[in-house]
Image 1 (cartoon, rainbow, N blue to C red):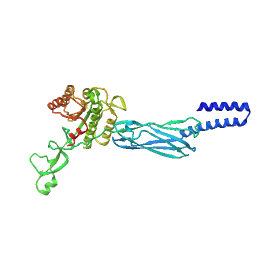
Image 2 (image 1 turned 180 degrees about the vertical axis):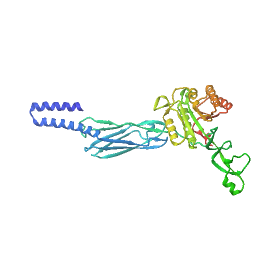
Image 3 (image 1 turned 45 degrees about the horizontal axis):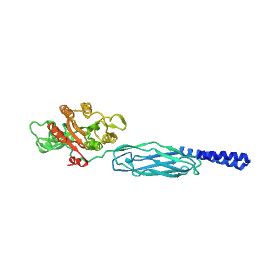
Image 4 (image 1 turned 45 degrees about the vertical axis):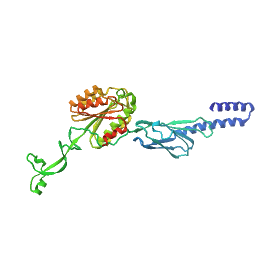
Length: 395
């Protein structure tokens, strides 16, 4: 197009010089001036654009997310036409693409919107946001402007659990316990008559004065859960038949267990040999045991970004990170297989005073042998084959 216009301008200049017609020269000047003006106009409009993209950046699978694109023309000149296009991965696509053409007057502000749908766990880029504009007659080539890329975190699916059978050896916690081994002084549950051997610090003096005989306070027994979730995402330790399915089940299991533990006001930590998308050169950073919703969100964000890969064997990773755990901590090992080397490491962990649960996810041909081996060590084994398998923790 530009080459054609240049050729036409040169031809008209020669024609005007040959015929001595001033009108032809004026036409050339007007055409060149219009081309320069339209080119400057378009560049000026694009440089004067102010825009932003607003949406919920952290969501759960199945949620529909409204994205609002705000565009403001800070110039005193209008944008004759403006093409707006935003990019996003197919895992978030509610519609094939977002593409719209609009007109912006001087100092005008425009809001455009579209929908995304979180279909799969992950950490996804949203953008860049592209703007293109040009003159009305098409005298100059289109000019474009590219915006920044935002990100959306889609948390893993969380299954509601009611009874995950998690043991604990740590006293003085916040979970009510049926076996009265440890009593929590912060949980009074009644009084009884004084018996020989009762501590004087447990005597309720007000009740004693009222009844005229010594009364001793009774407290509810309780336990504390100190739980470290070890998530194996080494692809070599999952069945080649269902690498994707098995690893996703393992991530969902880790997320659901962490959610249940922290919802009970207990502490949980996450250790995994998977690759974090924000730290692809090494395994995801371990998340030590903590309590609270903010800590749960940190765990879920890591599980959203994490990816399975061929990496350090699970036994080696477990050996490196379990030594810093306190006595009585429960280790939940989430993996796709359990070999002899893993059971040897389980024995060493038990000798160090740690409780263990083994959760095997996906297709595992030697599940009966693993159950028998674990039973001889007093270790609970849970096999998750699909979503329905989580019902074992919902009864």
